[in-house]
Image (cartoon, rainbow, N blue to C red; front, side, top):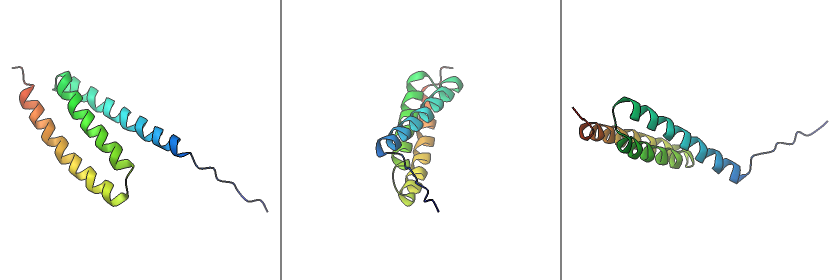
Length: 90
């Protein structure tokens, strides 16, 4: 009988994956916001805040992550509403 050896990713690999995933999410969010209604600066501020918050939420516990994600959704909505008011060019 053979014993399966499970190899878990190293701590540095897990941190790097989380940073890369949050960066890709923030970049995608930035592109969507910039192409729809915001100028580049407003889209960068909103996407950086939400991307950083998603990174913190993914590396924390489940309960704290859920609470933080709910807070980030409310803050993101408020920032998006404020940015849409100030970035209107018409």
